[in-house]
Length: 326
Image (cartoon, rainbow, N blue to C red; front, side):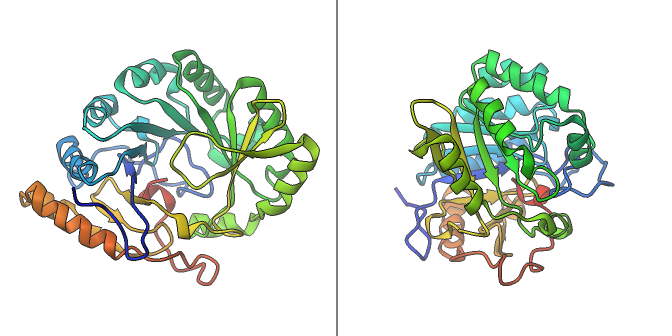
């Protein structure tokens, strides 16, 4: 079996699959506030096209698959796609990133479709701050989280983008909220991704000092939790409360990167912080065989960049986060 190994010896086992670039929230670090269209254009990959790409990936050892967006739950019949992807041999870890606004109605259906675990974007427990960041309503997210818990989705990870002057003073509150609900909190540094990301990066906070403070305050020790991503985890001693740190800026993890991203338009992005990409949609619509697609993917992965340039060239990436896949 051909393996997906890049030019730096990293085995690629994880695909973040965007099923839409649309969202029903407008988080300040992700999507422009005036982006409103929720239609499904012809240049999006169909479910059948998406399934072919994932099937070929899985045949070369990829086994972590995360459904993302934008907000994936705004895609019509997304659970039908999830069912199909869940049945692909080799995919043994199928997860979802969501803002949770639609989980209240869809959590049980997602569990039945094959989603085992979810990441939920939640930067604050203050309704006014939440509205400021997302233009949405906090109560829908909190209700969605409880629905996910009731449906048996586990683990549930809360992604908090930490921003100076916005929510940095709420970290202890989020730690305790997650501990009380058996959620895992993951803090994330802002990245200069597109105009929205560069604007949010003015509120950038390094997580190094925050991590040291939490270790001291809560007597935290190193931990491991389920998942294929880049977070480092700590756990309160004699407790299940776990906190993760994703530090692409202050302590980048490029040397262990095991993932690529596929946009809803069929663009395979080889690095979040570089422009290296391969357009798969034209090949799929021209009727490429699985064997030929496999060769395209092998060649693409071999050209994956060594690392991002966010620190050196913060203005380099002009696409905003929702176009790339979270």
